[in-house]
Image (tube, rainbow, N blue to C red; front, side, top):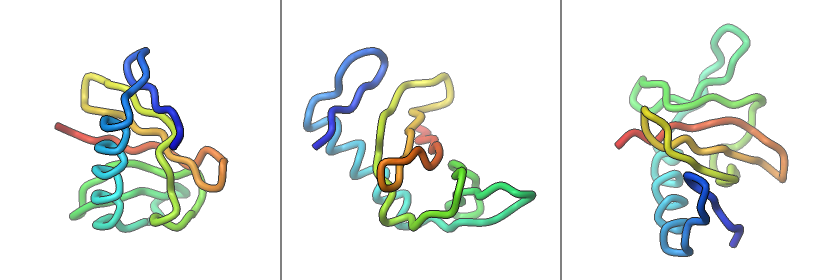
Length: 90
């Protein structure tokens, strides 16, 4: 398992697994929508993220995560390439 960093410190294995599980659950309910040249990740009609290119949702991996004023921002990758961002709201 890759090391994940959040807020300047390494997330422990259990924290990383919990974050990956949250992202997996969210992506399992998500759909990709093309809008104005962008690829949006929507869950129940609400935008939760965006991708730089079209990639299978089930193959996206968590690269890094950090706290923002709006929730936890998650950087996603696909086959080692940066794919996009996701916002986990508390």
